[in-house]
Length: 89
Image (cartoon, rainbow, N blue to C red; front, side):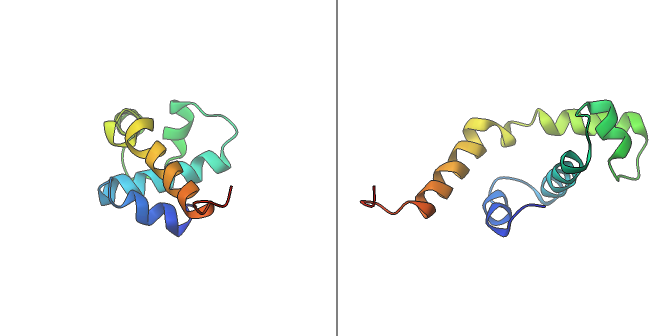
């Protein structure tokens, strides 16, 4: 799953339901050999129909909240800031 550092960082940017979807998606990506929306929707453990699950994934993956610029660059910057102390390079 996600390390606790990631979870605390993502709490600032995602709603609780989005956090759960992200955790399930990461879990699925670790277990599935094929990365297709149809395959992920079929194995996503949600109590909704397959088509609804597919749409849910599509909507989640197109959220502006999980864009590279808004969330992943600041996360990488924070990781680097914690790992590399100023003046140590």
